[in-house]
Image (cartoon, rainbow, N blue to C red; front, side, top):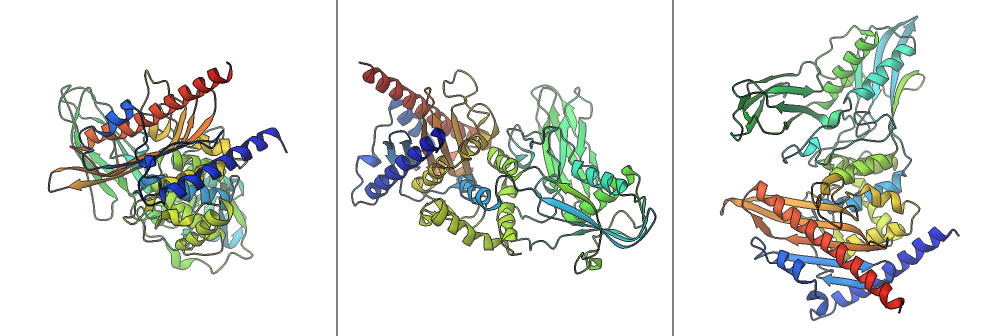
Length: 537
């Protein structure tokens, strides 16, 4: 056995023993020192700031080298998990699909062929590919920004530079390279891979640009129209903007309205001359019809003419029962699933997390995405050796009211990874404090813990109409602290039931939780230095 593997197994064994200890202590009758352990004055000061008067905090920290439980506060209690649920979903999908799994989206030519002309249809068989090449960088990795366009309601959301239609363009070029220049029939998207489940956001087999139209307004000079960039530009979608640039410091308030079918989009409002570009999005209501038109247009750019009208509904009824005997004329092959897992974890990609359920179900031969839950249960119980009753889960993203998780359950999953060959890859797929992903916006300056906290945040927000404020159902972090000496600690820090005046001030709660994780990392590093000094005497 290689030394690295022995080290991983030792760490996993130490964590497992520690979690058994915590579970036993937490299940005892009285709330012992585990519930009131000394977190230090700096952390306690954060936990007692205004807005946390009626909140409950949970904490768990375990040294993976020694198995010592450093902190434990309500570790066996259920908390609203928010997107820390994705640790369950993506761990299960990573194991079930495999990190090297790739989605192959084929295009079949149905009918008869005469030279370069197809007397029939092209059928693109959707495979539940999350990005369809729309984020793939030249090196084959999947691109992301710290605040993704799928979170365009948050300040600072931005776009990746890649072409959202890149996968379809690649398919179109392959069709042309296969010798076709004309399709006398139609182009059809085959969406029969699975039945879209009743989840929000709803995963579907065909996804282009997360099934969103991006709308980026950039200020110009006061009194002049704002500059508009929108993508992907596919018929019959049209976007108009009357957004005006106003004086520096003026109001930035942009509203988006759409026609009933979502194809006619208008932007109104103002943007301050000194404001950063503001991103809005509009949902693609018929992903199959959109992808059909987008592929017809891509074929046209590649030199392939389609006789059918480019816009209109997707003629799914014309699909054959099977493609036996029909030649495959093109196929888009995705990056490996580990790249999609990284995207989902880094930016908390809700659609991707819900889609992961469908991906797992399909791999096991089901069209019912909820058949993924027995797969998850088996993974937790039999593979990761994690107690499934530490969770209640009803979706992939962590957005259902009934979703719950204990700090112990989440750290059990994190501990599982330490005993696997993908331990480092999984850890590096999590947002890194002050560096990238959802936590890239915190701890950016004068922060010793920058780059040393790898954690999945979880957020649940709601409107308190009675008091006209934001109710923070959950703000949490679960992941790994890396000490200055390179040792790893598992940790969970979370709060349920906080409040903030508005969305902007909520960022302070997000930063508070990140600040606590940074303080835990600094404390852990100091303990390592103290222990080393004592050992050196």
